[in-house]
Each structure stands twice: as structure tokens, then as C-alpha cells.
Length: 140
Image 1: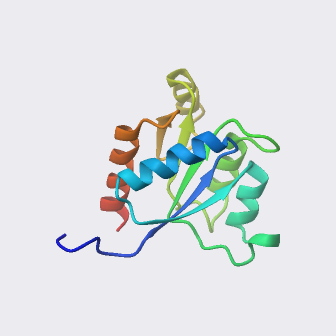
Image 2: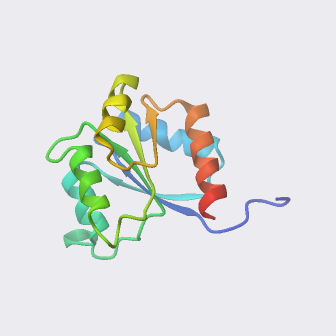
Image 3: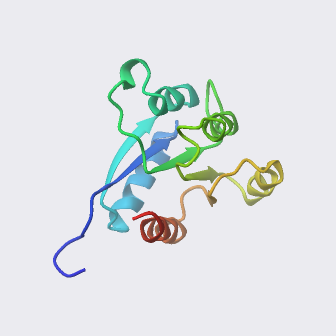
């Protein structure tokens, strides 16, 4: 690409209640040299409000990508994913599910919740960068 990155930043919504994991994800994005605007929702209810631009998120930017933790307070990732995929306005936003185990990924695939892909936490930097690059190539 020559001098710096081309294109606009990727708008990413990270739905994650664990601050350590939030920091790891920020590091991964930095190391992957992904130009991004990262928004963070701390639980499933905040995530849905953000996506629907409700309440304090009235001016929220529509994300290009959602990174969704499964195990969260108030409303878990499965419920959020179901909401997203049942919403005409939101269902085409790619969702990467962050799971804590490979077994969890298998269970999810069995549920067929239509996530675009799964990454095991703590976020494996290599795996994550691959996903982000694929997303970049695919969507931009």
C-alpha cells in the first residue's frame, strides 16, 4: 500500500465485560495495524442499545464488525446474536464471536446462530489478525 494505510477506519463494536480482554483486543488491533474506531459495550443490553441507537447511543456509528463475547451480564452473547440476526437492519453486520473454549464453539455451531466466525479467548493474536485481515479484504 505504500505510504500508510488506504481506506477508512473499520468501525468495530466490541461487546465485552472483561477489561483485560478489552485491552488484549485493543493490542491485537494495534499490532495488526488495523485502522479502526473501536466502541465498547460492557454487556448485552448496552450492545443492543448501541446497535439500535437507543438512549445514550443515539449518535452511535453503525459498526462494520461486531466482536461479541458470549458470557456477559444482563444479556449474554447468544441472546445478542439472536437479536442481531433477527433484525432486518442489523443482520448483515458480520459478527465474530469470542468464546472461552473450543467446546463452546462446537456448541454454538450446533445452535447455528449465524456468527461469521469464532475466536477463542484470550484472543490469540495471530488468529485474530487473520480474521481482521480477511474481514478487511472481504468487506473493504
